[in-house]
Length: 106
Image (tube, rainbow, N blue to C red; front, side, top):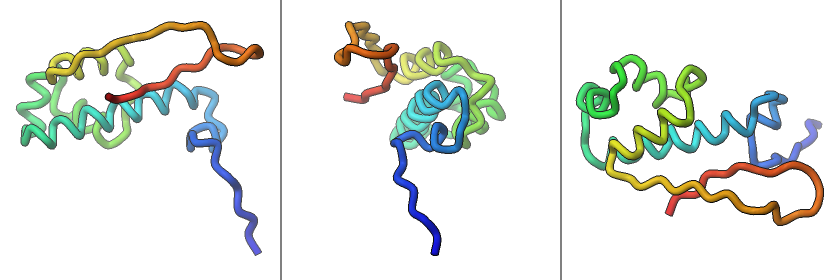
């Protein structure tokens, strides 16, 4: 019988990736970019032009190949798609350990 392992909520961390938090953030940003492109009925070529990316680079991003694209570029893509991006820095709510980064879409 196979054991069932409970996820931490971050599949990249569960797989042991040492950059799990960064990759999860990029995955969430890429998902949102793709969602907006689909909602606006943009072709990949039109979207790539709007975002300042090549079509192959955008295609890779939308397929989860975003290691070569910075979070800053992805935030710029959201701005170019007409979204405001707000970054909030606050004191950690728990008393131990380092801070945590998350992405929340309103």
